[in-house]
Image (cartoon, rainbow, N blue to C red; front, side):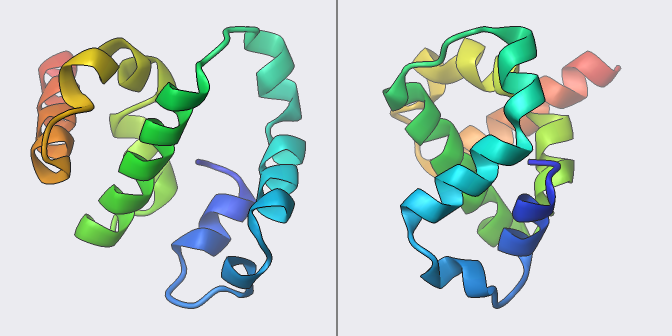
Length: 106
């Protein structure tokens, strides 16, 4: 969410949207290599898919860049709240995640 790849995906038009998912996954994995091996926590494919979907929807819905979204809803927050939020309307889930962030900030 804070990588150059994420910044490129945030742009209005990006050549990477035509690159295919395998290439994008390779780019993300390469950029995140240190953080992936440092933390060591495993996320299920289902949770990762939902997290990614929410992050992208959030970007298109609010226009926030990926780094700002990640500050408000880091992966641990997303994983912890997955069971509560994954069946909700996306807009409501995003609003709840913002509220969780605001409660932590105060």
